[in-house]
Image (cartoon, rainbow, N blue to C red; front, side, top):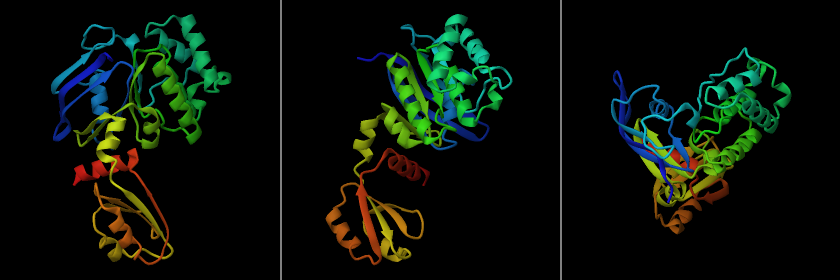
Length: 308
């Protein structure tokens, strides 16, 4: 049985007239890759800052147990943090910055330099180790920020938007690196907007909107609970006939991409034989495809339903 390393119980936080988070609870077990999801303004960053003791919750409890004994906040050496906003020194050589940040987290400077160069080599930036961060592209700056957050081999890493600024190829490479450090013993709390990347990375999902919990459980569990709503995409030769589409029964959500493409999400346990018969009557359809909801689809439907 996995050991619980973080337990959050009923925390709430209000800023003036805004209830940022409301009575949320979750736990993270050792070895998890725990995805913390929600739209902008959902309360994710507020929660992460509370976990790191940057701000205080109004109510509730947070219990860390990284080293086997309960404490209010782990030591600096036990935590890695990749903030959404970059926080590295722009005018200091990259290697010096990485060594300094690792050393204040308890890492020997010689070992820090060795490990930093190994990571720079992996990320194809070893030849730029003596350059200043400000001359790098946004994507390469994100790579350096990532190295800084995990160089000291923390027991727990909070990665806030780790894929930000990366092209698709480097996003996939980052997935491999996140899995690699997880296998080496780092428990990960991951916040990201790219649902297709979260699907490939996370074991567990925690979804909030407007400061309230919408889902807390395994990745498989969210598919089992919300993934049985059939989705059909229709591509029309000419413009859409909205009256005809609105007349189709059991449609829970209609997403129109342009004047020719529409995605219909149907209610659970819909008899698709009857629906297909109705769809066959639509004029101008030249392509039809169906699939089960992805995490992206489920995420959008849950957030939309909660926002109504």
